[in-house]
Image (cartoon, rainbow, N blue to C red; front, side, top):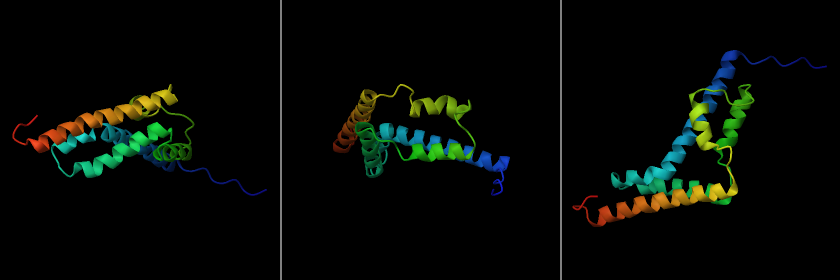
Length: 138
C-alpha cells in the first residue's frame, strides 16, 4: 500500500480559500461592470470598446444557460482549500447569493439577460445623445 499523501499545511489551505474569495469578488465586479459599465462611457469615449464585449458575454451566459468559467475555478479552489460549502464570511454572506441565487431558474436567467441588455440600451442611448449634443449634457 502506498504511503498516505501528507496533508496540506493550514496556510496552504488558507491561500486557496483567499483565492476562491478573490474569484468571487472578481465575478461580482464582472457582473456589476456588465450591467452598469455603460455609464462609464458617459465619461470615457473608449469605454464601449471594453464594456460592450463584457456585456455581450454576460447576456450570452444568461440567454444560453451557460456557466461562467469563473464558477468552476472558484469551486475547485474551494475544494482545494478543504471546504465543502461556504463559510459565513462577508464574501459568502453577501456576494455569493447575488452571484449564485439559490432559486435560479432558466426563466430567471432569461430575465437577467434582458436586464443586462435593457440597462445597457438605456445607458448607451444616453451616451449617443451626449455625443450628438455635447453642450446639452444630460
